[in-house]
Amino acid sequence: MVTMIEPRRKQAIAAVSCTGVTKEFGTADAKTIALRGVDLSVHAGQLSLLVGPSGCGKTTLISIIAGLLNPTQGSVNVLGTELSRLTGRALVEFRARNIGFVFQQYNLLPALSATENAAVPLIIAGWPRAKAFAKAREILASVGLGDRLDSLPSQLSSGQQQRVAIARALINEPRLLVCDEPTAALDARAGHTVMELIKEVAVQPGRTVIVVTHDSRVYELGDRIVEMSDGRIERVQGSSERGET
Amino acid sequence: MYWIALRMLTGDRNKYLALIFGVSFATLLMTNQVSIFMGIITRTGNQILEVRDAEIWVMDNRVRFLDEAPPLQDTDLLRVRGVPGVAWAVRHYKGTVQARLEDGNTRGVLLTGLDDESMVGAPHEMIVGDLADLKKPDAVIVDKAGYEWMWGDGPYQLGRTFQINDRRAVLVGVCKVSSPFLSTPIAYTRFSQAARFAPRGRNVMNYILVKAQDGVDADALCRQIEERTGRAALTQSQFFWKTIRYFLGSTGIPVNFGITIALGFIVGAAVTGQTLYLFIVENLKQFGALKAMGIPNWGILQMVLMQALLIGGIGYGLGVGLCALFFTVTANQTQLAGLHMTWVAILGTGLAVLIIVVATSIFSARRVLVLEPAIVFRG
Image (cartoon, rainbow over all chains, first blue to last red):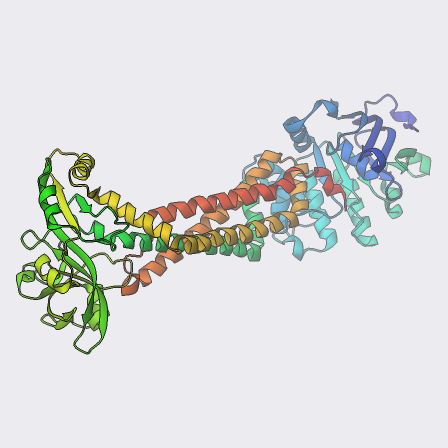
């Protein structure tokens, strides 16, 4: 178990803090250990990349941080809230209020236009549709889709669909944004554009952004790179440690 | 949330229409078959309901249904009249006779012999002719459907002569009555005339129609008549249901219709269930994303139920509408007389459709309810 925290942030309070997180799937002979005592702290205002080979536990860790999976052991504190204390509706509401999601396959609703898809989190939160659509149009414009507001997902390119997904993830101004392989389904150019967009639009003071990726071409954009292997964190690097400015 | 559910549902137009078609088809099949079944079964007892001026039917104890009545003795009539509480009692005949038409064709006819004086049990609605003309020699009134079976469409011609069991009969009127079980003409005549038409036997009277005195309970009077005469006495309603029970228990009608109705239910459930299930399975990731974004399980269930109820409502409305159209189009067909859409069929089918859509939506929603929202992170 390796815990590495950047020296200059030692005093800050972490937005996400995992302590001794273990996750096992299955039972007895069929048991698979996905995470083996992970300790991790992630601070706000940074773009943290969670990297490593397939099956190393990245997606499991991000699912636990997002409150979508429960750890077998260990504790997870997100934005000052111990997730194990939240169950049922409280956890669902916590996620809805504080966490935005960007998925590898976008998971846009095929029958909804770009505007309607982006407005979904606000509609779930009970916003009037007209107001939610107005805000969706604004945020879509900010991700460069001002001219595709009424397009269905099937009428958009993969990169454009991912931008709609990013707009949807950010529309309710979450304090934690988790992105799972957002560039995996995109070509190199579109993937880089999407990562730049996340860096430019999503990373703000007070917001924590965690991106799971194994696309080494986008590592340069991360403020921190958390390397995982076999359910453990192997190394945490800050941009300064990589010789970047 | 409901708006999202609605858009998800209507967004895939093909599946949306397939779902509505499934429910419409099931509704049409069930409403239509239940209505026809009820109509046909009611037709078995219609001739009992047509007698509106008597409350009680007295008959031989061996009678199982309307058309199977051994003769009574003339003394039975006097004994029934002597039972306290009886206002009046009259003889009545029902039987099947053979009619030979002018062109040599023959028809089986349900012959009703009415008490010569009171005409109790006479048809209530004459289309042409006068009921009083039954007093004329050899006079017979035939129902509208029967006229068409015997002489075809076209303007009614009174005065037509034909033979009933080789006896001369003269058509003096055409009436409108409820259709019997079989598409058989119904002929009304005086009892004394029916005695001449009917196959030879010592006695002709096979029913006695009774009216209770004011304030006398019909059920109690039936028991009194049975005790004093040894004959079976049933209220109109009891005799109607006895006849229906006979047909339900002794014919293949309920089984055949039951199979069709069950098939309608099964096909509707299968088509709706399968399409809804596939719709949900194909949208599993989207539902997972919605769960991740903050819609709780109860919310997801509400969305699926809303989708199912909408499909059920539209499909049911279309199905009932198509069924109503069928009965409207066929309303004037003689062979389908008496068959119409019933409230029982409408409400019963509505309940069945509700069960289909709610059950299939809950069954399908199980996949979403047990879905870990983390599925959305698995590419």
